[in-house]
Image (cartoon, rainbow, N blue to C red; front, side, top):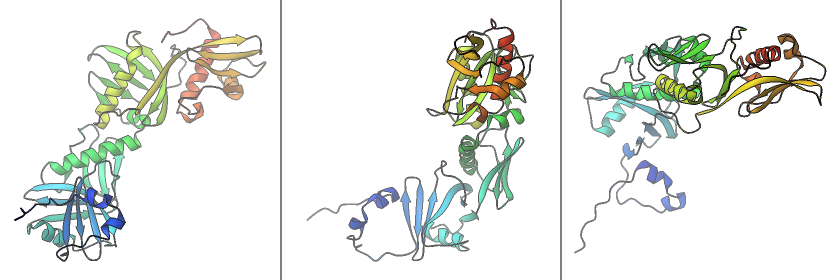
Length: 347
């Protein structure tokens, strides 16, 4: 007699990876009983005769419709979508889940049209404009208050929010709300400060246009695909490793580690030189030419520079004019370098 072979149910990912031509040949031994649940790697499906609902635990998925399922005092957050048919604002979702999960005490809370919102130092999870959970930007990402029990949903929403931060991250916002960690970093309205200890300031990134800034060094790049540019000042031994300080600070703010390519940067010093061959003034850098003045015009003031300058440098493909404040900072650097061409910072 042949031994019975136990077949484990296929995961949702495996089922939907089979060719349609193959699926049409499958005939179940027993008629399908609806509703039924199919478990997968990142959640589960609930199938009925009229529609199929997908419940996912993938934090990288953009939030829209969420379901909070509470069982035995523990609440989990799922991203909800419809893969077949249409259920609209399905009023029987809780009863359906109780049936397929076999738990008559289960609670299900469906929230549609969800989104995150940042308001200075407050963060919110909104459903149709109504606040359903909230926290502080200065707190850890998993610290939220809401109507659900347990910690699991807070961890999940916190991870959702961290990816939301990556997709919407702006250094201008970081300066605006004064993100900081004592003894490590401070993003103030016009400057970012980095410390080795609470007392030792080792690096300074300046994004204000100000004639008092004597530094001719620049720190530019892209963070999560968005360009930025600063004056850079600090200890010469620390300037070459500014990426480490920036990376640690931003990872602390978003509560997620960087992936490859999230931060790409360059550093350069500038100096003004006169090109006698072409009769023009040039703002050179340790990376090459940044910009030049048209023939016959000298960088005597910032207004003339702005009017007559031709930009030849781009920040990883981004125009200087697309980077907040950087154009103004470079124009002032051109003017100061023209006034005292020997002043340079070796980066």
